[in-house]
Image (cartoon, rainbow, N blue to C red):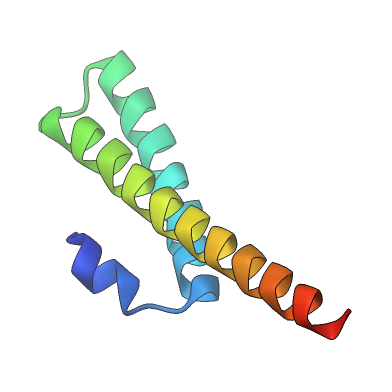
Length: 76
């Protein structure tokens, strides 16, 4: 997944996608541990996708906090 594509999604959609990727990562780790995982590069790719999603969610939260601070400061 590219960050550009992820930024177009809603926050709720990103959180749901992050949950499903974490579940997929856990299952892949279990398969890797038992020797059933054929494509081990999927582990790293999934971890990086989760990191991208978390980064975008953090950016959005930081932006929302800045907007709240600015709006809170003008009301005083």
